[in-house]
Image (spheres, rainbow, N blue to C red):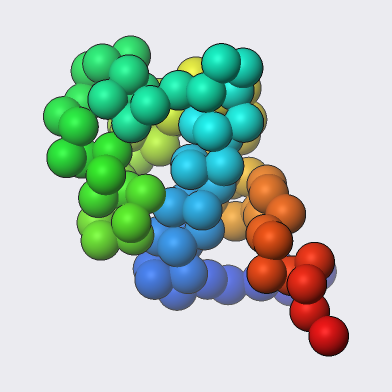
Length: 90
């Protein structure tokens, strides 16, 4: 069985989209600053992860996945959200 391979850019972008979705899907929504405090990371780090500018360390991915109760693999390789752009395709 052959598994799909991902580039670093693809993983970084998937994490960015998933992190933003998970953060905003909480009730109440969690700000980037609050998530940074919870995970003991600088706010700029969370901002960079969500924008896809930087790749997180393995420890950061572990902490994010533990907080949101999802697997590290899902966080990096599975689309955990439904984008508005896709529902409006013609």
